[in-house]
Length: 326
Image (cartoon, rainbow, N blue to C red):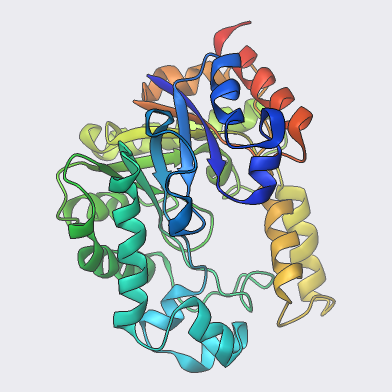
């Protein structure tokens, strides 16, 4: 098992590295006896920001409202973005968007990544508060397969494609048949899953403690194994963290019912909401080791959203203590 930490080329991440420069990634990896990083490239010019020997995986881009664009639903897309934003984010055609996204797949090969992570989800900005989604899990999985088939040739055969779960419509791991379909219909031999433990916890609003969260993750894995043991064995990677935001999600849902939430939130309101839902906090309970032992991942990523350098290092230290008994 390779133990990694997530790092992007965004200025906020680079500033939080030791020394506040890209060179600090090597110090971070050395200090915590890690094997490298899972890299998210914000721009093609950032490919060489970190030494290739550090880059074990790459997190591909994610477009929250992509299904509206892919299906040509301009009316729904216009609820989320202005015409100028649509051109900037997606381009003027499917072909232009695919060309941009295909380049992101190529970046994984250029960085020497062993795997690439692809979010299987859709969430329009006008849908997230109400949770009244236009597309269900089946539609998002079907759309994902269509898009990936257009892009997969840009990914080296040696690089694994790992589908990641979210709590929005798409891959949630609540329906094993949909997870199996992703594997079966993706024309890439090295296809598997990146199980995000915090995202999975976000699908259950009743969770209140870390122990409850760990138990829920283990129960979900066993559900996949009962459906098909080979399917559960396709969990090649773990994004390890915890998110116990159910009480907050319930509060927002009640506010929506009372008509107190905006029908069309601003990007800032959307980001604030998502970050409150998707907490990316470290697991402290020693039971976190049960997830690692059950999955036996090839890649384990300590995935956090650090406030600052000290916060980042405290989270890595806490979670390593939980899984290693330090």
